[in-house]
View 1: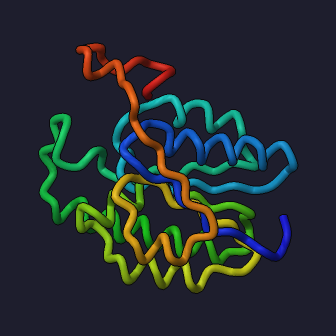
View 2: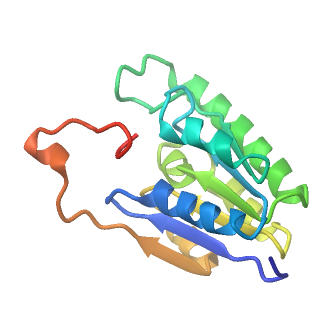
View 3: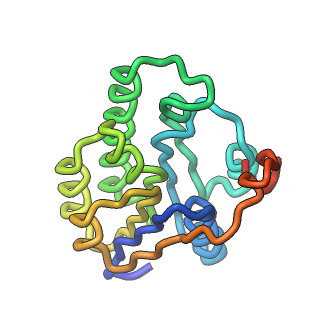
Length: 177
């Protein structure tokens, strides 16, 4: 995939951050590139990516590490549990990034994990700064920190203009999860 791996960020309050990263993964797999996605928040829930990603193996690997959405949707886990698991996800990310096995490594919802205090910004900055030059690193999630924007090559902000949830419509299978 070349020696000039990029640091790419998908952030913002609008939907589509993880979906954009998965779209990039789908494109890359079309060229037989290897992609790994590590999910920092969504781990304990079942959603479409978990099932469909298996169809993209062996070029695509999904590692869902989180305990689920933090502090919402019936989350009864202590924050310490979320922090411990997020640290495990960060250690897995470091191993995957430095393994030289993947062309793209996606750290899904890592910006949100930083914002919630589950992982330390300095640890993520060090991970970005020490990635091999050929690895493309993608960070998703709202609340991206300025320090990450500074290191990134590409930053895209998803902006919500209209969302059916605001009119009382529930999340839809295949669209939202």
